[in-house]
Image 1 (cartoon, rainbow, N blue to C red):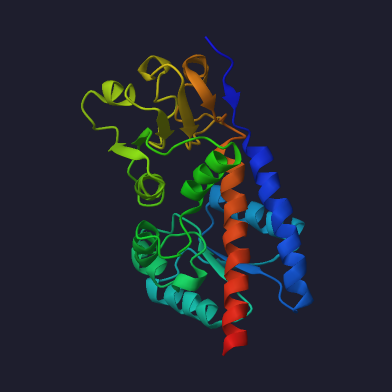
Image 2 (image 1 turned 45 degrees about the vertical axis):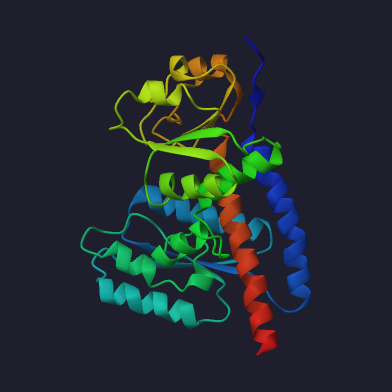
Length: 285
């Protein structure tokens, strides 16, 4: 059909980081260096890699990163104590608890212990509510990345029908609310939705966030739909079947190199924003 627009996440992420470098330099003139604290419980190798990658990206743009590595046998109460120390540490501006934590820990309780001002990964229940009501909280980073890609490429979503496939508390649900707040008409669907292909065929915008490789098929798409693939499965495979979806879409994110790189840049953006807000709060008090 057409020649779809490739939504290049690496380019979007670089534009975010270039903007952040200027803000970080401005903060440094006031003696403030934005710092992200990451907590890793246990020794899951994939999680360890993610934490290291986030730390390295912080340093590349002039931020500080503090990595807290806790043993597998850490209790919920011990983890809550660590989070509370970070909440009270004025040199720490953002806190990230790497998911998943060991099964014996109450993950929701741990997430919700992070103070809203430092919840730069958008994982608290309070943060989800505040994002939904547009009260200035930091949204989850992958939904924020999807909106950042939409803005960078000036994609028109107002009045359009967006179908979100997935309902996780850190992706499907928040991105649905964020699109709704941008005046899209939103349908939330998932792997159990009956006649899912017929639902997707009505979409001007498809957000693939179901966590299953090549789940969304090209024949499901309306001609000229925009495909935003937030999936990342083993083998660098997205939730959309890229080849068949490419042929039907007007714009599409690749995997890798689509939403993924932007997600990390949004974590940094939220941390810098948190550093600015917290420094302003200190000055006023």
